[in-house]
Length: 310
View 1 (tube, rainbow, N blue to C red):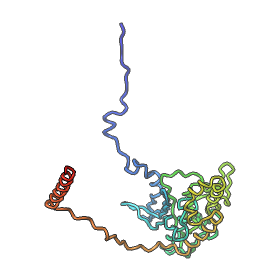
View 2 (view 1 turned 180 degrees about the vertical axis):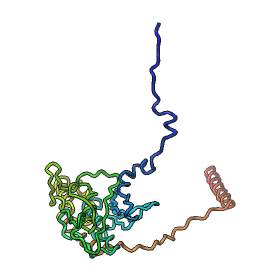
View 3 (view 1 turned 180 degrees about the horizontal axis):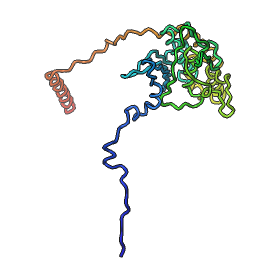
View 4 (view 1 turned 135 degrees about the horizontal axis):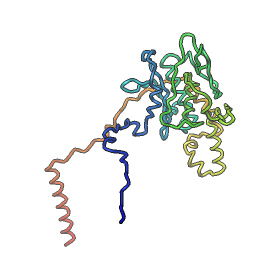
């Protein structure tokens, strides 16, 4: 005689588990905010009396780069300065608004705009000669990532906020960081994530990074594609061809954009919104008018049928 006994199975998620389950924050559920990172970027020491921690927020959309200088309050973040690569058209750059060179320009624009707003643009001009080297100096026991610290006014410090992006070596986020640092902001960083850094040899090639800042990698690919596959070149670089931007002239173009940004980093004046008043929505027909319209259609159809019978 066989005796069948069922094995004991422990209920892992019981009613008690679900009654105590705590739902994650909405932006965590959406995968938008890394709260572990945000806490460390925003939390300030209590002996600093609520002086805010400023963040350089860098985000990428499908077409543009966005750079903001932000700080957090209990009811949300406040934006001190904002720049997007869509503004670079004012400075002479209308194509390739999402690549490494454009990220550098956008970071530079955000930095110069902020320093002009807080009155530090004359004190901290940043690195006017773009050599891709990390600039820093020590005052006392503290390291500042600027060329020289003024006796009266310290540099504006901001921390890089990358969001949920992976911080791989050569990522475009670090192009925006380098642009903001060269613009005069004090942003703690090293060369270990810049293009040109070799992790195995622990060496940094600044010339390679400089070439990336001036769009050398784009120009090299343009030349390669033009020789190998002209049809694909015309399709992929149609915007460059329309604007008559050539591979040889990219370095000069980006150099002119950097100079133009430094000359006038102010945002463009807002245009007054003027709605299109030419369009007018048709007014609704009354009940009598609708009945008359239906009757007219019936009469027309009846007349058509009579004409066919005759």
